[in-house]
Image 1 (tube, rainbow, N blue to C red):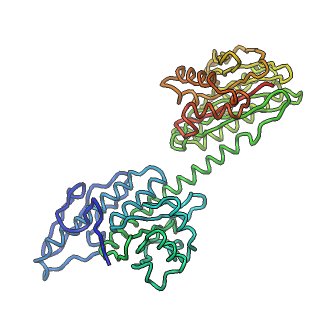
Image 2: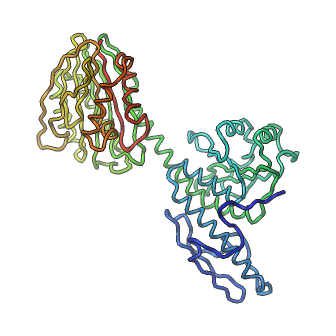
Length: 490
């Protein structure tokens, strides 16, 4: 059996280097003092502790003083490697990056080449692999949990257990399906540990694979155990943040329309790409409401500010405020939807009364589908784009300030009549800003993309939305929400 050295990072022998070299170890009468290197970013490393406790190894006494120096150098080298890997984990941003860091560091400490990590969190995504493509991960997923590389580990709350199979092809305890998959993927040996904390319980498990039959030394096993003890609280925090992000995304989706109205004479389509939780300081909306008289109310807008629950990375508070404002806007549309200026004026009053620390930009339109007549008003919002046979042009509605900024909000209304086949595109600031270095430059890029839309996109508002997203960077998460609402008149 083999015990390959980890690539790039020593685990034994030699003098320490790097961040941990700044720590010192004093000996007196054969007793080693505590070593306390600088704590990595995020405070992952605990305060000073005896080196023997951190590495799970006893120091020699006075009767073995002749070999103390060499052995101490080896322990400090191990501690240096452990410290450097913990620093890499502390710098990981996001759950996927943290899982990948655990896999890579564990492989380096064990001398393995491939690995697989999974979590017990519901909805947290598929297992993450190292040196395994999707097909390889899928093959391992076909092995029943109780017989595979995580057998008996996913229910453990700490790192007390382990799974070590030194020879996957010869060990009679290996389940037939696991042996078959291992042979197909060229896996010779497996070492796995649970991930969990006393406060959070079981979080998941990580498994590392060797290409040939192998058994990592006790020293390597002890190093990776210690590393996983440090990694588990970090993963617990990342899993909690991931749950918050998914809950916020669900909240956002629930606050937006689940369907758009279907009316004769006009077809609608929309796109919404929410910003990442760590970037969101506001929230965008779109809406379309069929009014009692058969006309149509359409709107897009953005709410932002420092109200309760708002601020950087406060997407839940911003999304909740967006839901309240959108609900109020619907009510005003039903009551006086044919007058966009009055609708936005009422929204301004409500914003100042109930959301005094927030502001909003919006554009609201009233549409008569049979006559293709459109009345628009905007409050500090990006001007809509009218796409026709001659190209694309702005419908200027942004001559006023955002809602909640001035003591008295005023805005002019704009009326126009569309021709059959014309499209009206409403969008939020985030869509424009990602298209250019400035807001105005981005709006110009978006207008050109609409003007250059192919014929099939001009015939279908859904295809036009897809074309505009693709032409301006695709449906990727950015630093602001992206919203598009397109209407095509028939």
